Length: 363
Image 1 (tube, rainbow, N blue to C red):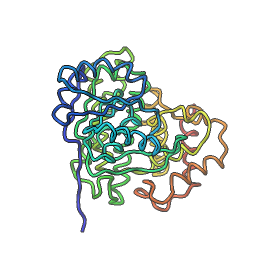
Image 2: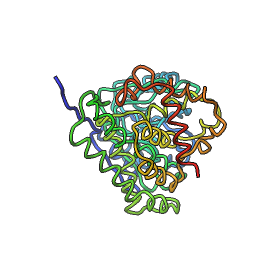
Image 3: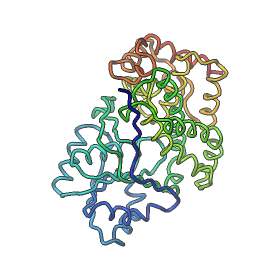
Image 4: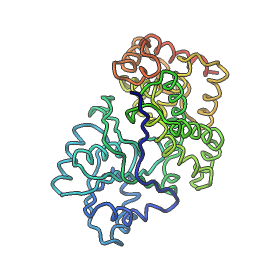
């Protein structure tokens, strides 16, 4: 029996200044919120969160997230939450903070609230986490029975973050339709646990349309720390449209190649998830046999928002072929999402495609 599945968060709120409503919204979900955030994010947003909880007479627990979405950190924070008898966990920050909060919520059996402070990934809306080792090497995905109870994203906070983070979100979001189309050619199952719905495909299509139409204008505005309709559109594309699209539509090679890059040592680890996914998008397009003209359509967009399109951009200009084979091995390992696109893909084909992207995009 083939079944279609569509999953999503219960509520999504976006707008300039909405972080001030977090206390009111969380009070509808729990009485002992457990806030996870790194120290930098807490310094920027902590006063707003405190004032919002004070306004609703809510006592919250704060614990600093140390930076890696690893089982070690998840287990540590789960014990803190259990000890404090938390009844709702809040992930305040970027993708790894959010993924950790979702894992803690699942372990404790309590609702999850996601409050992204950047629009840098499509992690916020999903019912899964990407898990890394303590050293930052990709280990796998952790799946949950339900999506976050609430996703609340403050556009003013987002434009206050470094501009490369918004661009990274566009790199991640640009993978959505590319991977959905590749996955659907093989009628592969999605992260939601079934076949893609028409709604999921339409959402993925809308995400790409918004990116190409509004992305560069949004990038220029956000560089000036201002919120415009184009910025709002891109925040939604990066967060909600891409999030629903990838989870319900299907992943393929772009994200698997990102995961492969985590096997490498050196400065590539300084790059964000979305920066590496952008190069993965171009690599997937090569693997699928797209024309140079079509590949350059995506590459030119990435260049305009300063995302990596060459090996030099990835800090891999002197990379050895043997290292790229390691990327290919990790990207094609059993259970990776490359199998949704082509289960016969080899590490050599991935390594060659990574080099081909560099040849196409280097001027």
